[in-house]
Image 1 (tube, protein in one colour):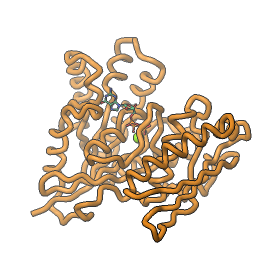
Image 2 (cartoon, helix red, strand yellow):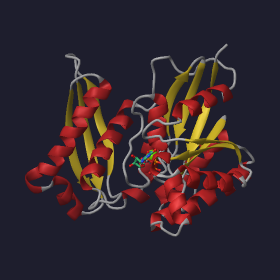
Image 3 (tube, helix red, strand yellow):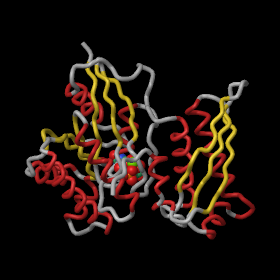
Length: 310
Ligand SMILES: Nc1nc2c(ncn2[C@@H]2O[C@H](COP(=O)(O)OP(=O)(O)OP(=O)(O)O)[C@@H](O)[C@H]2O)c(=O)[nH]1
Ligand SMILES: [Mg+2]
């Protein structure tokens, strides 16, 4: 008898959702950065535990949407939460505890508001979620218990786990439990498949991560990446062409850097990781284009596969 099902991982920006999904899957399927709102569209990672296949949907952080893209991301996160067999609500416990003690940053206070929004949303969907208190490596245990208690009192959680997605602490217990919660069903994916993200999209995500790593101060969310060509060569290598879109001319200069050094670094890092992930030599060609308002642009959603209404 096998089991298989979908688990939506929801949570405020920066809670550690992508880190958790990568850890549960055991390989990198979703990019992780220290910036909020890194994940822009739902990414599926496939984890296996015993006879269970757990398809994890790493959703964009749920937050108060402003831009069109943000609204589409929030909508996608809730759609997945409603359709999944189980919902895991991941909470950055450090941010919650700091904000409660009056020591938090503005981002921590926003995270508290986001958690309240998610609790409300869960109440409305009328379903229980598994609560996973994350980043327990950063806080004292007694503070954690208070947080667990107050969240449990909302009545929307069926159970509580305390984990560190980063160190892995507590994650195998959570994984075993999710495996039990999956319905009896044949597996959805072959055993050796860990993600169902198309290679073009994954390749674009890897480059976007490098852009963020290198120029996140100067280009907050101002860049998007599209893979424009992806060819398998007869010699077993892959030839990938990508365009990085920025919103203004000045940002183009920042991305290129002095003598093109910044773009060169981004290309080199991305190429190294892509050849590891794709397990073959990669020839990567990056272009930079200015496209004002790409975040308001309809094509952006179609490219990302986000449902879009309104
Ligand atoms: N100390 C610590 N840091 C963590 C843990 N889990 C994640 N992080 C860090 O938290 C930051 C955000 O992690 P992500 O996995 O990108 O968070 P996310 O929830 O996917 O964020 P968005 O996609 O922006 O919504 C990164 O810097 C991670 O390294 C943890 O258990 N402990
Ligand atoms: Mg993420």
